[in-house]
Length: 175
Image 1: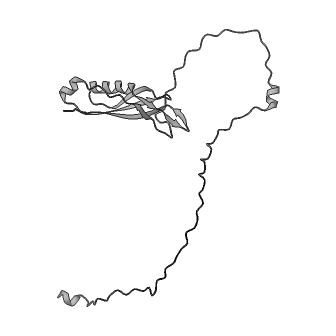
Image 2 (image 1 turned 180 degrees about the vertical axis):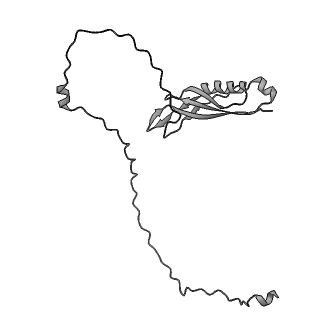
Image 3 (image 1 turned 90 degrees about the vertical axis):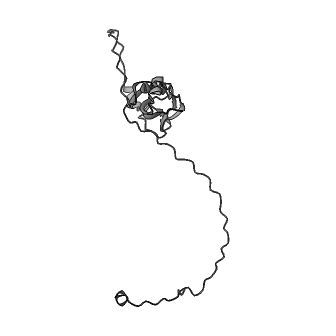
């Protein structure tokens, strides 16, 4: 029954439609070496200059009546924001491996402690926050190793900046 429903089909060989191909010969052109274009200068922030009129008008009178003031209280340093934009991320300069605590070895504890480090403009670790904990002794060993680690600082417009960076430390038992 299926043979009656399918229409008859005959095969035909492939016939190329291109009548004649022509071969082109190209002569090699001389290419001049182009000098490398230097990178564009980085944008400079405009600095407002004082006008000469303002300088001449500003006069300060001498006063002999000085009052003594108490020392101002020292303001605590402003908190570093969680995110600071940078062009070049901080890279580890000297990595210190944490000491694996004996009690954790005996208990067979393995895993990763994830820390958040505040790296200053000199590459030193100023603060450490534990984002993912494993065990108290392993967390303490990871924090201790993180403070001893030094970095190449992050850079923003070729100037070192203070940034927060995530830093995982893996604890693996070796047999």
